[in-house]
Length: 118
Image (tube, rainbow, N blue to C red):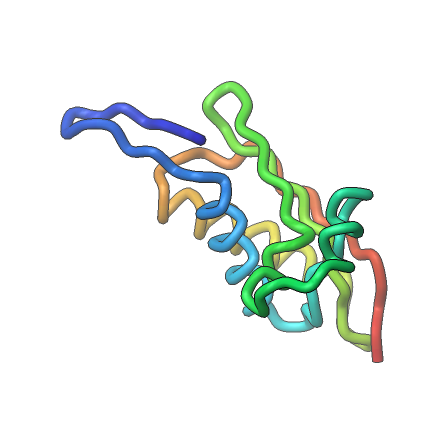
């Protein structure tokens, strides 16, 4: 949980808030087909039955270090799109959305393209 203190009081953000915010931002970007499982734990939970909403949030990893966020994304792209342009768009849009929504600086957004689908 990330907690910020300001002149009004404390604001706490749960990890689920960040994953949902980032997953919704990424899936709205042109060329992104889906979010992918990004590790052994995610692969195991992906195999289990779950609610439909939880599928978009997999593939998002958020770490809080030195008052800044480090974000890792695992995605699948549509065949034929300019991969470099889509990844740069995702990095810019995720950083902007998180900073505007929460006021927390984003140090780094790493995008891993796991597959390209037709």
